[in-house]
Every structure is written in C-alpha cells, then in structure tokens.
Image (cartoon, rainbow, N blue to C red; front, side, top):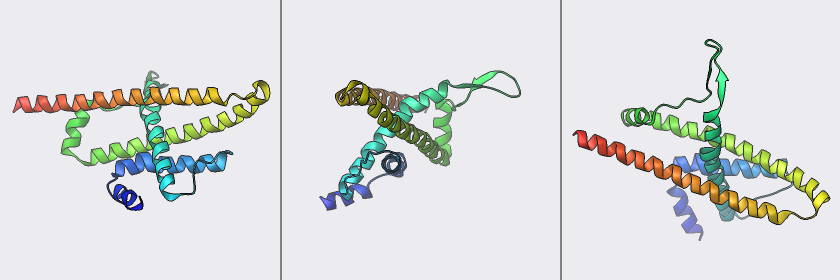
Length: 186
C-alpha cells in the first residue's frame, strides 16, 4: 500500500498539488485549530487521501460556486461612475490562442485558480465554524438534528459534482471545437 501511495504521489501534477492537496491541508488544519472538529486520522496515507478529498471538494466549490458569484458582482468604476464587473475574464477564444503562443499564460491561470480555491478554502472553514455554532444552538432548541445535516451534505455534494462535471464537459467540448476549426483552416 505504501509503495502504491508513493507511486501515485510521483504522478501528481502541480495543478493537483496546488488546487487539491494544498487547500485540503490548509482546510483540515484551519478546521482543527479554529473549531472543535478534527479531520486528520493520524495515518499519513489516510491523511493524504483526506487532504486530497477535501481539497477536491473545495476546488470544485471554488470553480462552480465562488467563481460564479464573483463573476456576477458589479462595482462602481471611480472614473466613469458606471457599474462594472468586479472580475473580467478574457474571452475563451483569445485565452486559448494566447496560451498556445505564450505558455506562461497557463501558469498564470493555474496561479489564478489557486487564489480562487483559497477563497473557497476560507469560505468553507467559515461555513464549518458557523455550522459548529448553529449545531450547538439548534441541539439545545430542537434536539439531535445531525441526520438532516448529513443528508444536506450528501445532496450538496451530488449537486456540486454534477455542476463540475457539466462545466468540465463544456470546457472539453469548446477545446475540441476550437481544435477542429483550426484544423479546417489548414
């Protein structure tokens, strides 16, 4: 088992390290030190799985939820006094063409995704802290409601990964379409 784990670690991309492991580790440690919950098991290999699992969830929350919220926020431009999007992404076609010519744009995008995932990490720790406070309060008022939270957790997980699957499928389809357009031009 240990050898399999080592082999898997050697094949992990920098994207997975910075968007899954790093946020997962940060999340587990913040939860441990800011709440009464602990997500670590003490076993190195189990903890690596736990870190990756939580990091994957946090990354998907960042991609599907946080990104969509940030793209909808509008702020007043100081110069024009008009409301503008807080986040403005390059059009996909332009990003695709530019990143093919300048590979550092892909690195900048990966760094950008890390920042988004860290926003998601802090938001998730905040949600865990709010859950902790509310669960103590709710148990005093209503008795044991843990099963409701477990069902909600599972339902949110299903919805989150359905949305992530759709987003990734759309991204792949767009890349294939762009490739086919380039090939037809040749």
